[in-house]
Structure formats: C-alpha cells, structure tokens
View 1 (cartoon, one colour):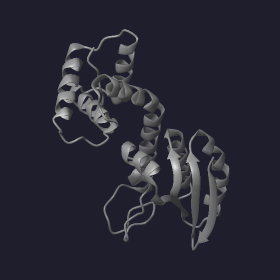
View 2 (tube, rainbow, N blue to C red; view 1 turned 45 degrees about the horizontal axis):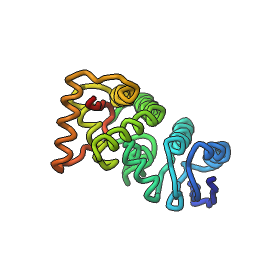
View 3 (cartoon, rainbow, N blue to C red; view 1 turned 180 degrees about the vertical axis):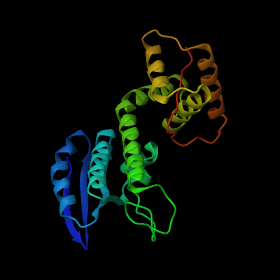
Length: 225
C-alpha cells in the first residue's frame, strides 16, 4: 500500500511516495488530482522509496499526467528507485515525466523555437499517452511470452526481451500480437515458419552476446515450436 507526503514548493507541489505502486494505488488519484489543482504549475514526484511498481502503477501516473495536460501543468518525476526506473525505461515512458529544458515552457515550446501549434502538440501528447496505455493493457501477455522464452531457451529476462524485440522488428509484427501467438504455442498452436526462423536467429544472436535493443514503440516476437 502506498502513502504520500505533500510539501508545497513555490508554484509547484512536491509529492513523496512510499510503498508499492500497483492496482491499489489508484485510490491515491482523487487526492493527487486535488493536489494538482491546488498547484500553480504542477507536481514534482519523489519515488525513491517506492519498492514495487507494475503496469497498474504506471497507468496511474499516466492518468495523473493526462489530467495535468488538461490543466496546462506538468507532472515531473524528480527521482525514483530501481523499481520505477526499470519500468519507465522498459516502456519508454521516462521522457513523458522529464523536466523541460531551461529555455522551454513546461507544456509548450518556447516562443522563439519552431514547433507545431499548441493544439497539435496537445494532440500528440495525448496520442503518446494512449499508446502507452495500450502497451500497459497488453503487458501481461508480453510478460508471459518473455517467460516462455526464458524457460524454453534458458534466457535472462533482458535477453528474452531482446529476442522478442528483434523477432518483432524482423517480422514486421506488433509486439503484443507476436506475444499472443507465442503464448498460444503452449496450448498447441504453431508459429509461421518465417517467424520461427527469425526467432531462432534472434536467440542465436543473443547467445553470442549481441547488444540488446531498446524497447520499441511497435514490434513483435515469436517462438520456435
């Protein structure tokens, strides 16, 4: 269970969180929404003491960020522990909670910098959040597929993720579709031959110590039967 400590800091409010950010942490949202409304420009999060964070916890943070966008404010993760850091890196969400540059407004680009109209930027940000939410919803299947690869080929979690990403990219398949097909093999399904070949190549490449790719926006993965 997560708890919070709230400290005003100029036109922003610093919120320090302890405990676990999971499905139960959504109970914090009403209070966080109130804190956001009371702030002048947004919330700074200190998540160093969060010992566990799953996709539900990240989804809660995305909800808070979306509310901030509606109010023309920002939610910035000023510091975090390993649990939150790993999930932000794995999902590519870290930049969504990063502080703006010294010469850039918190929500919109500086006036002397080229950029899309404010309305277009807001639309882009909302689309980004929607894509991440979709990734969170499909995450359990992806985690299952990664577990299957770990068990089948003796891979580490990082190596299994690398295999999923490489196979996804090389077969031009969305990651969650490929993960679903891989999970189906446990129930007797089979993967298409080209996917099996790319999977085998990715496993072999990982075994040789190739550099693992970072988390892609789109992709797929597969498993040899």
